[in-house]
Length: 238
Image (tube, rainbow, N blue to C red):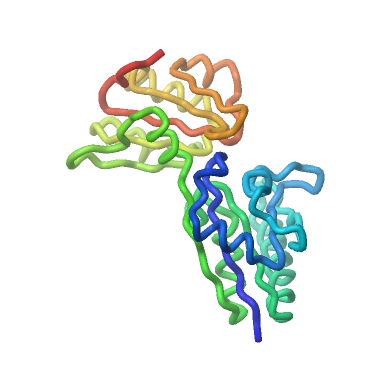
């Protein structure tokens, strides 16, 4: 009997934000895959779930380099998906950990597609997103009434983001570290300095909260940084 791949969203950093379903899957896993950009890198996702891992479970790092070359990335996706498929052929249950939610800007998305294309069962357990956790942590509604909410990855092409906030949309900006200076410019151009908050490493010991654009302009934000832009000034800014 073939095994199954289970993608687990471990949330932004707080182990208590895992769902019961995620914990049960982790406890029952034969192999847990911790994706990393390089072999020596510590896995944040793995650290989040350590408490729930059984002693007999095999832990395996899997390298997904943070590069822009699509051909090289596809080679890594293919190689890693084939490695997982070999374990599934042996009837083993493989859990693939991913920060936040597995279906939002996640490497798991590509592994999911490939493993399913090989004819294997794949199940996915959702996780709490960074912006969902931030909104709850700060008591800051993401959107109310009929207000649209845009979830935007920070890239060089910012036309969609600029058009949305110009029309009064609420916005979540992820992957902030890719173009922090451009994001600061957009915020200033739209006079949203008082409508801005950035949280880095949400739910982790190194969590930081900033309402100052200086942290976009002068200090490159950590990779795990999320910005929320509101259409009105944020109450209780510190």
